[in-house]
Image 1: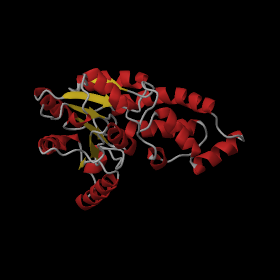
Image 2: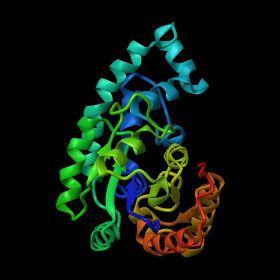
Image 3: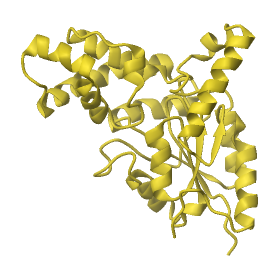
Image 4: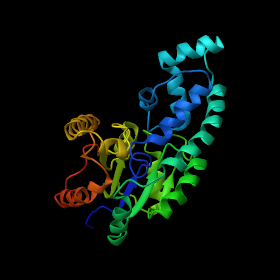
Length: 273
C-alpha cells in the first residue's frame, strides 16, 4: 500500500499557539522570583520542550541559579523542592496561558486543510494535563482542535523519548512512523520525532528559539528582523530536523514534498527500520 502523510503531531507553545512561546517563560521567571532568585528569560528558555518538572529541576541545577538557592537555603534542592515549585508554577502558568493562548497566524487555516485532506491532527506537550485542559478549549474557540494528544506525566518517559508519539499513534490506529510528521520549535520536541522515526519539521521564527511575540517582531527594522530570522533558522538547522520552516503557515508545501519523497521510497534522516 502506498505510504503518505496520515498524521501531523504538533507542539503547542511557539508552534501552534503563543507566538514566541511567551507563556511558560514568564511563569518560570515569576516562579523563581517568588523564591528570591533572579533568573533571565534566556536562562528560562534553555531546557524548553521537556516536562515542566524536569524543566524546573534543570534550572535549579544551573550554576548561577544553584548558587542563589544555596545562599538562601544553605542546602541543595531535593525532588520535594521541585514538586513544591511545580505546584506553585502550574497556577502561574494558567494565568499566562489565558494571556498568551492566541493561535499563531495560519494555524486555523492549516487545520481546515488537513481535515479536508483526511490528515489527522495530534499534539504532544511538556504541559501537564491540568494546563492542557485549560488550553484545549481556548484553541478550539479559535478554530484549532486536535484528534489525539499526550502530555507531561501521561507516559513513563517524556521528551526526547518517543513514548508520547507512540501513544498518539496508538490512539489514531496508525503504526507506520513514515506516515507521521512531528512539528516542534524545541530540540527535545525534534528529538522526540526522531526517536519515533518520523519526519521532523522545526519551527524557527514563531517559536522558542527567537522568543519574540509577533508584535515585537513586526516593529523591528526590516534589516534587524531579517538578521534575527536568519540566525534562528540556522540554529534550528543545527537541531537537524528534516525541514525548517518559519511558522506552521509554511507547512503545506512541506507535506507535499514529504509525500513526493515517500513516493520515491525516501525516508526521514532519523528513520531506522
